[in-house]
Length: 507
Image (cartoon, rainbow, N blue to C red; front, side, top):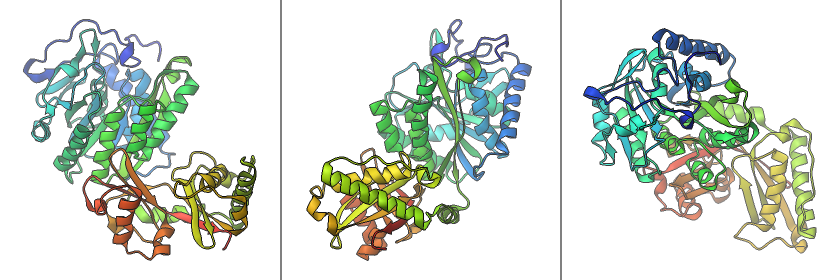
C-alpha cells in the first residue's frame, strides 16, 4: 500500500492541505481531501474501499459477536490507507441493513465553539459523486436547541489544514449505502455536557423507532505514542466504550489515562444508544498506523465498534452465568486467599503475595469481598469491573474490606476469629431500559446520573432486607448514589444490572 501515488493523511496533524478550500456554492461542500487522504479518482477510491470491505467480511465470518439490531458504529477517520482496514469492520457489520440516513457525529480538530455545528442542507461531493443531506431530519435537530447551528466553517477546517472527521466517512457510506443521505454533525470543544446530553436526547427523539437510520461516530484513538503505550492507552478507552461507561470516559480523559480523539462525541453517542435501547457494545477491530507504516515510535490508534440491541437478552446472561460458574475447589481456593490475606494484613499490615495458575481464577472479573462479624456487616468493598486476575481482585478487596470501608473502623486482630468471609464474583454489567427488567435476588443494580452520582447494590441486598423492588431502588438512589429516592424513575438516569456468584465460609 505504500506504493500508492497519492498523498496520505495519517491523522489530522499529519496533513498539509494544499490551498484554501473552495466556498460551498449552494451549500455543496467540495471534496477537500481527495488526492491526499484518499484517491482522487473514483475507480481507485471505490476499489480501495471495496477491497477493505471484502477483507473485513472474510475476517468477520469467524468473529464471535452478535449481529443484532446495530444502531451505532464507531469508525476511525484518518487517511484511508491507514484507518480504512479498521473502519471497514463496522460498515461491513451493517452492510445488510436498509439504511436511508446516516447521522455522522464527529469532533472538530481546528475550532473551539459551544454546542454542535450541523450542515443542514445541500450535499457533500467526493470522487464517488454527490451525497445529499437529509434536510428534513437536520432541520428537526437544528430547531430543538439554540446551541445547534448551521455553520460551515468548521467543516472546512483551518486555511492550511482541512477538517477530516466527516469527509473520511463518506466513501464508505457511498459504497455501502449508495442511496443514503447524511446529517453531518460536528461537536464543539471543550465538551459541553448539557449540549451533549441535549443532542443525545434530540437524536433519540427525532429518530424514534426508525430502523433505517444509522449513527456513525467518527473518532480515532490515541496519538503519537510508542506502539506499546498506544495499545495500553487505547485498551483503557475501548474498555470504557464497550462498557458504555460515561463516567469512566470522563474520568479517564480528566486524569490522562485515556485518549480517545473525540471522547465527548463517543459519550454523546453512548447516551443516545442507551436512550434507544442499544445496550450492548463490542469492539470489532483494533489497529494502528503501525500496521501500515511499521513505525513503532509515533503510533495513532484506530478502532471499529458497534452498539447494538442483544436479541437474546436475559437468556444470554443466564447462559453465560451458568457456563462461567466456579467449581467447588475454585471457590475454596478464593476463600482461602481471602482468609490468608485478611489474617496477614490485619496482624502485620502487609498482604501476602499470592500466585495462582488456574486459568479460571486468572480471568479478569469483578468481585466484592464482604466481612460479617457475629452476623452483622463489618466491611464490604469491591470492583464491579475486573481490573486484573480474579484471584488478585479477591486479595485486594479483602484488604479493602478490612481497612478501607468508610462506614467502619479497621478490623483488629481480636476480631478475626469472629469474622466470616463472603465473596461475590460479578458478571459484566449491562444497561436496562426500565426497572421491569430487574429481577430481585438475581440482579445487582448500578444506578448513575451525570458524571459523579453513582451507586451499587449487590443482588443479596434484596434478599437480606426483604425490600420490594421500589424500596430497593429508592434506597439505592438515596443511600448509595446521593440522589432523590425516585431518581430511578426519571429520564437521564441509567440503570445497569449484573449477576453475582455468591459463596462464603459459612456455606
